[in-house]
Image (tube, rainbow, N blue to C red):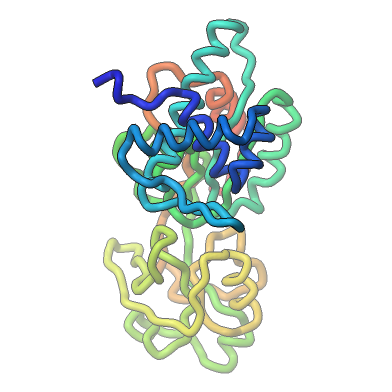
Length: 291
């Protein structure tokens, strides 16, 4: 029933409380009395029949239901804002909030992101650096940069670059431990591992012929800088992209590795908001080529 749907003001109060961390902070941000924000939040919880926030004297925390609603609420509010802005301004100038998720290879993308900020002063850019594959729609992200060979269905992908990740070790490690001559011999070596889709430790490495080999290691980390530094210091063998292999020795060259593409992904939409379109076009033109 349409009468059961939350009002925009209630969703705005909820999102503001989450972002500010308190009802008082949300009231300051919205320019409303604290009692008004509390009333709207209570009305939203009553309408939905669930508790969205746990409130104590010191902090406000999301419940599971609140976490589920938060991303959808931000997306809905952004859509309302975009619609209102479109009615008021039909000039197509990129403006408003743009939420972007990028992987830890973002060091190679820093200059590109900053040139976008310079070029579009009316866009507020929020960038989250994570190996986690965010739910773009559910968590309210507009665009994600992903270094992956797999793409989720329902997303549009624009390729930025292609590269081959390979196994590398430092000269010092090779001198002390030698190198495996077959993939199976990796089990006798210290491997430095990342996380699969940012969720669980990697337990296998891909082979270029399409197979894979099980691996185990003494260090698991989702930060590429940490893995590169650990490799450089001779702590083990790591799977690294070509732009992180300076001074390192290839291991099982031509055998262990994966062809990966750096892609820009965003939900399918018939009409992209100007800020999203500007970001996509900017990244495709300016992103570093790592072929």
